[in-house]
Length: 284
Image 1 (cartoon, one colour):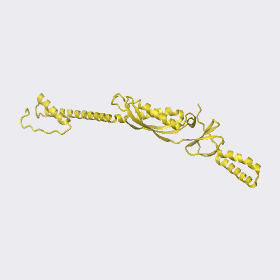
Image 2 (cartoon, helix red, strand yellow):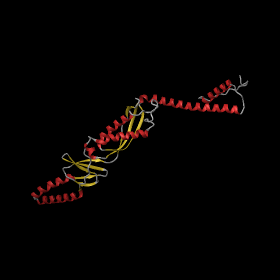
Image 3 (cartoon, one colour):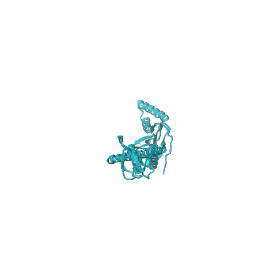
Image 4 (cartoon, rainbow, N blue to C red):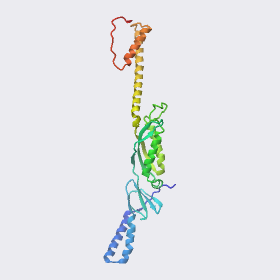
């Protein structure tokens, strides 16, 4: 497999002087109506003119002579080369690619919407020009394929797969690294260097988004209730211990159970408790 080779063409300013001298000589022969010098000068002028080209900063020109690759010009400036060269412009600047949102299934089959933001640039102009057709389209298609493969390798979250250590939602660092490696491997054939690849958008597909939102809310409520119950149990335990140690009142098992029940209802309830004043004895 061939790789890129850089070349340094002739300065365009030197050939521009030659061109202007020939042009001046041609105008002189036209004025003097001299036919033979004119016949000789015009082909040279027409041959020199197509050889001029400009390479802008972070740009390049791929030179091809009758199907044979002759090199790539990466130096910026004004140059002149063989007028029979085909000069193809390839930008070396970094480019952003914000892919469309695609609907795919994650590892456990949930439909999700995902897109990727990619920063890339051409590193090997030979591969970009000759190893693939339309390297910009190649970047788009292969990025889309990499995103689909990545989404199928991880669950969106660990609701259904609690053993999953890395998910699309929580393991963004690891997922982005895996995405960048996958895209880099796919685009290497086209001479593309991946500067950065990361997930730009991630959400459940509309048909299940409502259900998943309710599920997340339910999980949050259960987790909050668990914390409330743990705190209430600790508070009840402290209350019974303090009452017993300070010998404020003696409870039998039935009274303890009743007190625990009342305290748990008060501490774990959604609404504020309404006190009931007991005007009789503790046993009533």
